[in-house]
Length: 266
Ligand code: HPA
Image: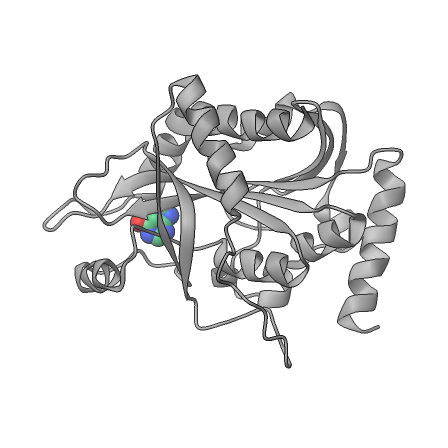
């Protein structure tokens, strides 16, 4: 089977398992946002492995696909994703995005935990993505797929998120997300380099998924939850702290996601 046939076969299997639900958006939940999945109404849950999708092995990333309704919209929620640092190829990292597109999704709402690299940031801040730097050294695209990534983060969805944030009293900044391979956190020299390159936050996911989503024609909105902030002479990054900060600020990001979906439905 070619890659495309494989994606189509998985999408057909998944469509059958979640019928009659027809998700229009893929919502990928980063660390600490898992509880959003519990809010999906009329939910049916599928384990990625059951349909031949790669599953994450990272603590805090328990893999589940949940189809149902969130804020009046039919969605496919991805709870727990596969990362490039797990030793899998880019194709595996983006498999769920491709399957969602084949299922008929037209939007990709992607969230992640990231480290801030700017002095004015604090842990718990939310940063909608205005753009990204793909520093993974990899891409999910092979062959002459010269897609435009100029407007990768949809201007209208970003505007909608700004108005939801204003309405709900949520502080939301925008910035550039640098996607790196990990799994080690960044050295101080790397953080200085990232700042110089124009990054506002750094994380180990999202960029490959967004490239695949744009190649499949999905509209993308992305948001980082800053679980830690890199400061000169600052304290080391601790994975447990990252998860704790994500859990604390998760509800605000969940409100943004619900607002974005509700506005799209209304
Ligand atoms: N660096 C990379 N990935 C991350 C970080 C970080 O500081 N925090 C959460 N994910």
